[in-house]
Image (tube, rainbow, N blue to C red; front, side):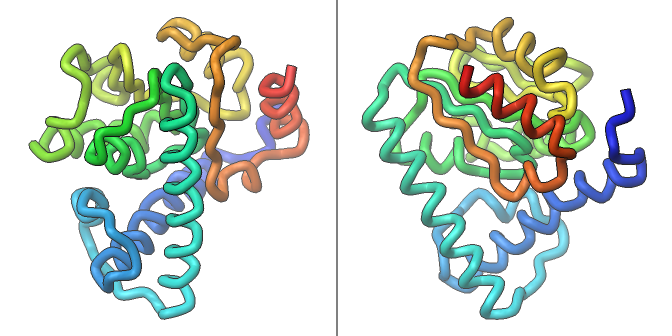
Length: 201
């Protein structure tokens, strides 16, 4: 099946995770947002323009408030982050004592390998992981009862991503919050429809 995106295009999409993390790090360093963890994922900090920092603040605040409200309202709820990149939301929630019953992060293996490595190297990140955490898939995945960092191509959502989530306890009957920040725009309509159809079935 033609994915609609070349291998070179995949690398471009994967690179957006670094760009997003750099923008969040800029906003955190300048006091727009509070994220003590994002610095671990940014090798070369950059000061973004005020407009970018304000946009990051709006995006960050909206997502964090939604996550916090959901986790508080649905103790047995699940969070699924599509195209999670270097996002730190799981750690921000855990640092507040808030945990979804299950939290899934999905992205390319290349992105996840860097993220998993950083998580394990930084004590303040690793200490917030569930006790039963295990490294899998050659270092590109983390599996536990409450948090899973999983590799998958969203263009093969039903065939590749869904079975992995189900293997690690995803409950289709449980309250579930799907989060996708500036990710679905990179998918062809047929792949986007495939995801949305499955979510709304």
